[in-house]
Length: 379
Ligand SMILES: Nc1ncnc2c1ncn2[C@@H]1O[C@H](COP(=O)(O)OP(=O)(O)O)[C@@H](O)[C@H]1O
Ligand SMILES: [Mg+2]
Image 1 (cartoon, helix red, strand yellow):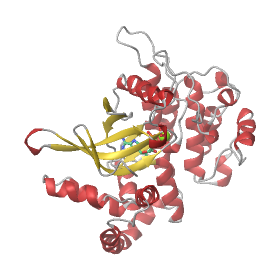
Image 2: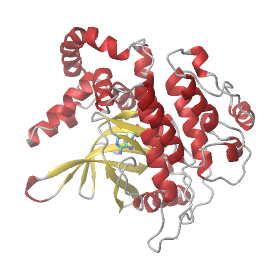
Image 3: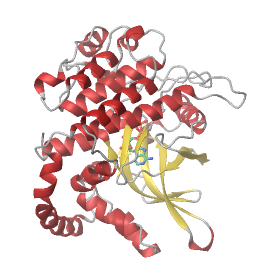
Image 4: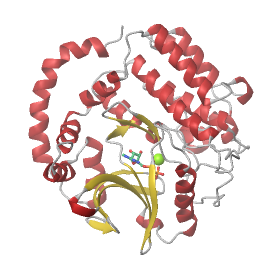
């Protein structure tokens, strides 16, 4: 990967933290005066797309759309930058992972994600989505924004338990200049609403449907659409099945299955009318069936499943530049190491130290396991 290590204006790129259809996302430090620095994320057009005017315009549009949204459940954008031929978005670094990765790691550890944690994540994401749907321009005119790409990969979860909707890369609004983005799959096939699969005009209820699929998958650990190939997936997405989650996972209250069924109605008019209505339904169910739930549980689960990464984040919060540098040098969640190695073809940097640290933390985790089993087990 040619980009690392390098600088883009005032930003020093240090790690690849994620990759998607059109962009690579890097961890970077932003240095200002007096040695003050903070961690940010830079979303850059992927190298193979540099110079592709349409994709660069998509990034500009994403920045334009997202800059209007100021909500704790939406990843915040700092600036749209251009240095040489690189166009990039500088944004808040969400120290944590995305919901797809959280699900994967929990399944690999032999656990389903706890139902209450899933309800909370979905309710928070729906709140962020609703803020986006309701956003207006400075004159107060609605932007009519539809995210169109709601998927577990685009829901970020931090070690503090914050949940943020990100990646408005193919969001459509009246602000958008790029109407077609050739080469990019518009909406991942597994998260298409029926109207999206039919190529019809979309509104906020299409995102409600996609979030319903995310909810289904986080609860069951299985794909909602069962087809494999893109064409078959699109066909299936046009007339999807009715979910019956409470039959396969009996700790899911029947009422939650009802929420899923309403979110996943084929006809948009029969779904929740807004993402906020979905969020309210999820929050009510959370309160009714899990009255002891506290948002701190999400942080607890995150720290449990990503102990090495969490230890490094903790260290980076020490008020010393040294600690921050160490975090940058060692930052290595499992998927990050893989992505970095694939992208660079390098040996896995920092693995030895990460393994040592991991071993220590495993001992600690084992002693906590008994208590945590109570939290994680199906009740
Ligand atoms: N602000 C951020 N903080 C931390 N990780 C991020 C951030 N933005 C994106 N990522 C990671 O990078 C991945 C790809 O970013 P995304 O914006 O979804 O790119 P694309 O538009 O190419 O899909 C995400 O799934 C997530 O894991
Ligand atoms: Mg994405």
